[in-house]
Image (cartoon, rainbow, N blue to C red; front, side, top):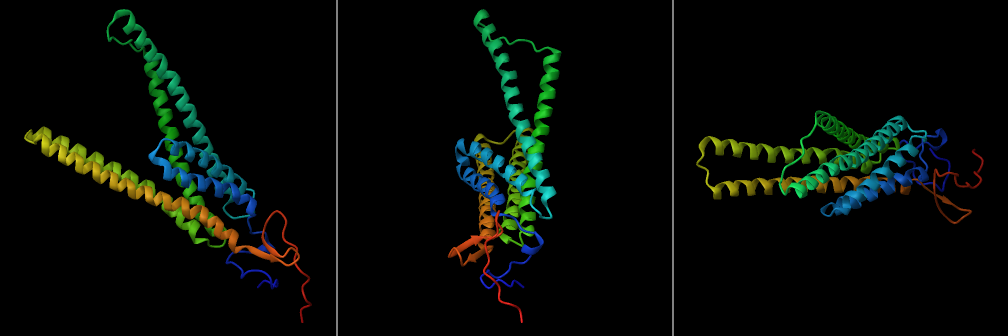
Length: 282
């Protein structure tokens, strides 16, 4: 039990004398990154939302790297998550740049031939070009898989951080929501694909499906897909919101009153607050 009469009630798992604490400064980048990703989710309906989320991912990764220097049980997992996330992000950017450099000369050649011959002929791809294209798309697919893995690692990191900070339920809930959200999104794509595939098969077998009926079924499938994706969007929104608010909750629960300054200070910070002299124990 704390002997400091000015301190807030101790938090479960909060052991300042044993170094099992996290400074507010080390959490600031992670909190900022989660908040920016929260804004990015809101703005996903426009293109800028994607770029905002990219900035958030970078800040979250750097924040996790800072947390890996703290004396907490999951610091190794945080470091691994940050490295995997940054690597996947770099690989995707390189892949996008290489893809643009690979595609532009091809269309430039097509345009040049069309202008000279006044035809729509296209250049014949060489075997080396085909091999490069196949290798490129395989590498890009693997980079995308690495990014998906890093996303789930970030979600798991929030849950682990919630435990490491003494049972911050909001962090654990936020991590759970971020795990559920992409699973629901994948389910939406499966529903759309299976529905469209079944519709095409039925149309080919019977050949009697009318245009009106076909368009009606397609419309229903698209509406169902949009509804499921909206559910996934709302859950991701709640996940990031709980994430940054969970860090706020930890900071609020570790405030200590400093009688010499006349205000509350966050503890632990880079420097612990000065405590008043304690009366002798009887």
